[in-house]
Length: 268
Image (cartoon, rainbow, N blue to C red; front, side, top):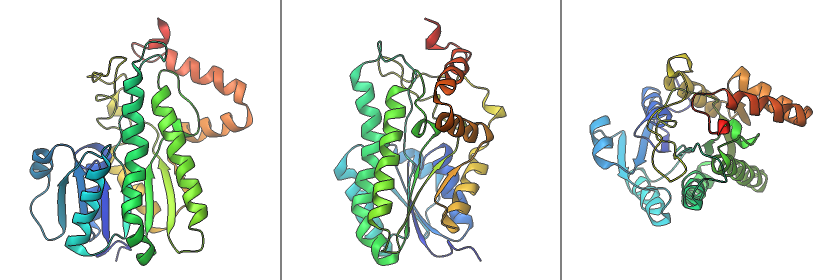
């Protein structure tokens, strides 16, 4: 039997990609699953009505929406056992060209969304000795060119969670984050360009990336075993290691990697 059997698992950004895969995988392990997204119709189309599922329209960049989401979970099941802060967006634009509003949007969703949901879920998580998880990125360990706002949001997210983990060290609440690396999802298609519009297409060959389903399975395994952090891909582990030990060399390697991606902003 899965550790998640009959646990209440709360997932933000559950309408696509890793979030949808996490919801499906948690349900298959016997959990009760609450998901939120900005598009209520899409959620309703993806998840059949069930005593095990709760769908709530919420924009995590809005504090009141996060409170409404968590309150709805508590009203339905009375507790939160696992919170997975998954909702997030990316960007691809040089800092000198990007509208500041784009950077603010990324911080509001990727960082503040996690802060808001964690704040309102924490009283229940403390009672349940539950798990707070966030989907971070290699960009939370190593700043990536043309992704200044994304990197900043993930650095902030990991700093917040590391501090929270230390505060809660003796409470029984487990705090962790996961860095999937490049995973097949909608995040690159929806990534913001310099003026805030969606990029519309991915610069990567998505068919060669880890599937969202495989990523979700690894994340839930890490939650069940209460891992501290997880960096999934070999490329990601190498980037973290190089940046820690040989930062100047890592600068050159990261620049070269992103210079060579399709339609790289670095070529301008």
